[in-house]
Amino acid sequence: MNITETSADGLRREFKVVIPAKDLEERVNAQLSEIGKTVRLPGFRPGKVPMPILKQRYGQSVMGEVLDRAFNDVSAKAIEDHKLRPALQPKVEITKFEQGQDLEFSMAVEVLPEFEPASFEGVEVEKPVVEIADEQVDEALKRIASSRKTTEPLAEDRPAQTGDVLVIDFDGSVDGERRPGMKGDAFELELGSKSFIDTFEDQLVGAKPGEHRTVNVTFPEAYHAAELAGKAAVFEVDVKEIRTAATPALDDEFAKGLGYEGLDGLKNAIRERFQNDYKQMSRLRAKRALLDRLAELHDFAVPAGMVDVEFEQIWRRLQDELRRGGEEAGQDEEKLKEEYRAIAERRVRLGLVLSEIGRRNNITVAREELGQAVFAEAQRYPGQEREVFEFFKNNPQAIESLRAPVFEDKVVDFILERVKVTEKPVSAEELMRDPDEDESEAA
Image 1 (cartoon, rainbow, N blue to C red):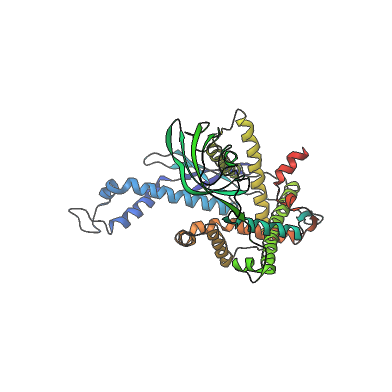
Image 2 (tube, one colour):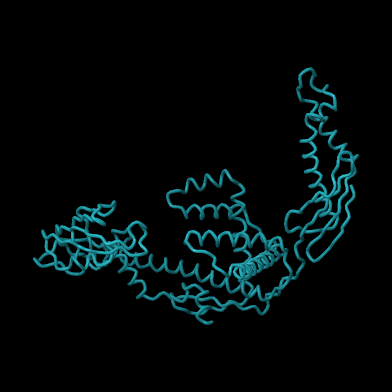
């Protein structure tokens, strides 16, 4: 076997490989001999099948296996001899292959760049933090209470008004035809809640129990049921009862009904939930700021093949999202591709930076941490946890897909502990707002 390096351009290495015909024949004959020890063919005892017959029956498939093994052997030897760190699997192209002659092929491999990670000294990261006010907890309490409202019969005899809950029977039609989903019995409708389309609720204000009303409305142009979008509809409505909505009192009994010892316990739980949510978002914003800073500090060539793979993933997700939204990329598709390719290159470069920092500092992902990642993934699918666990149990490669984000978070935490992090008090709205919106407003 003869391996010659023919090109070393940037991160790309190319090799010319020649495997003598004699070596190929020896490899094929050796594998055919192994097959001949056990194969059963009519007229021959096991181990006694002549080589010409074995070649006739199995030669082509064995040659394919021999070539695959030869490509792998050559790749491993070239990488070892030249001390390469491949970014992706080498690409092999056969240039000459004829029966009884030497095999010639080219091999191209992209290598990982050699670079020195920037020093953490002088790196500053701003971390937005939120102080939870008592008013915020009180508002959350009111929302919880509002979601648990009950209704009770109206104490006085009066017409319905906004805020009342009507118990109604209704039957709707479009163009004189009854449609599925347009009929209901003993339905509780809060006037002013905008639960029904158009002016449906407004037309019931002033109604009394036992009264019949004909309600005329028009479905929105963007209605989810295309066959009803923009259509005029008529509803025959019978008002059965008028009830008033009652919001439960915010006291210890209310909290106990939700599983807490008292109102203070419920407030503490709400505050803790806010703290956890804001803490997670605060870390994400600090991580983004750190990655932006690392991107500014590092500028080196990255393997084009890795950028291609990352870009294809980004572009495929974008196209799927556009199709789900019924949109198209538009006339500036080439410009859009250019922008997303730049994003892909940035991601690859940052990934290499984090990987190198992790490698130099012996940061690894333990088996227990992967188990925690699987558990967190299962929690994203309430009611299907068992299926998620079974999926990961039967697909070890799926578990490995969780390793990269866990490793990235560990490296990011490692860096954040070593750079200067300045906390900046912000409002909850500012913290939760998409940073891209801030950039757009600034522009």
